[in-house]
Image 1: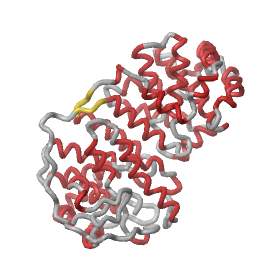
Image 2 (image 1 turned 120 degrees about the vertical axis):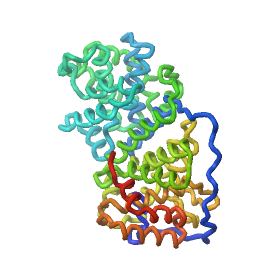
Image 3 (image 1 turned 60 degrees about the vertical axis):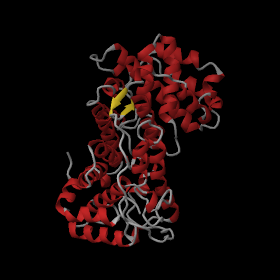
Image 4 (image 1 turned 180 degrees about the vertical axis):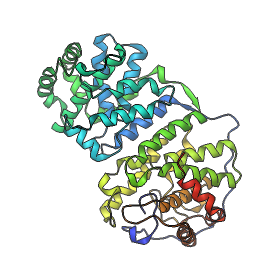
Length: 440
């Protein structure tokens, strides 16, 4: 099962043993809370940071280390309060335009690669529609532009923030290239390199501040992986500790889906199609407004964990090896780990992460069975299969609408998908197709 739950046997590397099929009857929807659901924006931002960190695969926590380095350097420059909080969040989000593991490797290993500005522009465009996040757009847009080349129209705070991100990003790239096991060992060489960039690339005052704070051994020791998470937990970020209602959060989920689907042209708009079809199926089942919004968000975010899967596996035009399939299986578990820490998304986290679970207990990563799979989780699973089959994949062409119906029937008969939800999709096949494939 790969590329959005393609259940064709030819694409399965090592199918797990099947447990006996239990009842396929759809249970009643869970009771919904009476109060409107609200989401803590800080928790959502930190979850998005965790997702972006996955792109590095073997370079985990890049955004968080950039935030640590930039914040420590900014403090002696007099940056404080909300401006300092915004700098930290901008650092966490600075690689928002990078979904490809290959592109991430190029950015880390080649300081002068020609396409550095393209992902900055992509991030800027993604951030524009969001009231809170849009104020980070300018520093992120220019974070690979040398100080001397920054356009005159940028405000001074944004110029400073952009150059601080550039410095921190360059420091971390050198750390990654040298090895993160002992950051202190590489400190002298990195400090010398940064000192040489003062003037055209980095503002001299920023370099001076960095050389001051990085003279302490503690600065480098704190960058070891074991200490990065605790550092972030210590950041109160009061300017970002606000709540947004669930309809607003849907826009954040749409942002996440855009990042995930940009990983490969084979998966363009996959998450959006899954979300649209999930909502349509929920409407047919009589879900209320909140449940519809939640199941739509689950569809938008179901593949967020796929950012950890190397491009060469996602786009492999042949059957995955057992080892490669083990890497692919990780993605739904990562989805769960990212979303479950956001208060208010506990149910959504399960519905999103269970999209490769099957009613017979042979799915992954939790081996759930029918008794423990909610109607919403079953809906997302059906929508995921339907939408994936409608798209071209590197190992097959897109299936026609009747072929999709036959594949769904086969999955239901084998105890993989819920036959009643499959029947809903088949009963309105043209409408299901439009929902799964239309891009709005």
